[in-house]
Length: 284
Length: 263
Image (cartoon, rainbow over all chains, first blue to last red; front, top):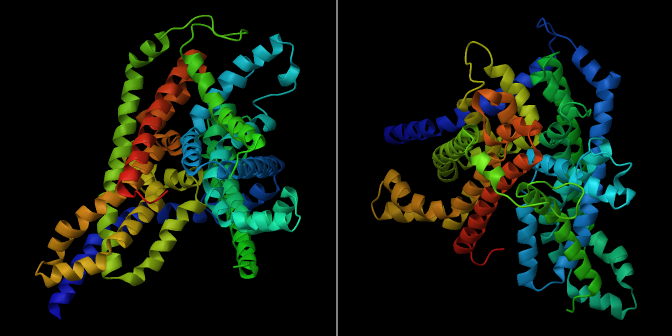
């Protein structure tokens, strides 16, 4: 008996470093955010931070921009991913694997390096911008990389490899026999996808969309590198409140961070509920 | 199945879309001047020469290596024993663990930074601006991936059965872990460790906010060169990406050796 007690003591002691690290760098920071969000600059209890985060026009605009860019880039990203994966699926296994590998490689191309590449190529003095201008093609006349549309373009770029990575396994669920059966019954390719393909893929599409959405909502590096703090996004606001040149307010930053976390949670929760409900009705 | 032309076009368009920004940056980084013409005026390697003779760049790379490597090492030494003990002796802990490893998904880097900066800028534990706050924060950042990697490896190795066999043969638990379990695990953990390493190597948000200029990593260095010549920054982007590419190539090769049947 004594021996086992001693042993369990040793075992717990060996797990201690892990829990110390988790508490110090994960749980305590999370707790600190929650506490600070309810304190004012003089450390008194208040709800003002949330009032600002949820009603101030400046912060509302940031939220609106974040939601808009995240939803639109995820939507465009998932459409491109689905069309691509659908085409990749018809390659031979070896070639499909190669294309997926190439796509995975570009998944590492994100954040600051990606923003710089786009600045060099599509910025105001970018290579393509000037080239197109000289060729008399006014494609970029109304386009501004440092605007919401420009950011969305860059976001779509880093969303596509993620979408392909997540959607590729899902397409294994669509059996070639189904396509044959559908076409034998007189269904066109379009009809097959509309009535069979897309509904079967729906749970994966919803789950992938929610991951892409969260990915975009939390993204900071790309927007910061591209526009410093000039384009108003939730993540950029948080960054400015804790490390900007002026108006530091970590308490307000905590409240905005909690709102951001809540939005991501709602999205994740809804998508889980949706896929669960669909899962029940799914044809096995 | 025959590949229709439409599908060929889609795949080619996808690859062009994914690689055009990289190709453009690569050409820009080796051109003397490239403006308003279809092709650059001339080719040169001077931007790379300038880059690799910059002490700040070399130091930043070293710091990124050190920080990412140290974090991966810490993660392995701390998490393998913990998950092992959990699986063999305290399976009930798995629920707590699930919570601990899902939390980072609700806390993107920018959110985590808010809590960390407040916690470690005070007088009690002034860690901001040092490598230590990054190692701690990065430990949390890669925890979900490392957990999955180690947990899966333990599943394939069948830790419990191996432990029983070792104990029947008279080995103590500690000996069994060190001589039987650990060597079997390492193989399965290599891939998730390398993936974590490449993820940390490209981390900017926490590095910039928590350490910034006091402990400049490669990503922060790149950011500070925003005002420099585009050719020069292209050379940094391409150097950085070549390294990441090399790393992902190694990961793919190792994956094939470790798990030949898997995708």
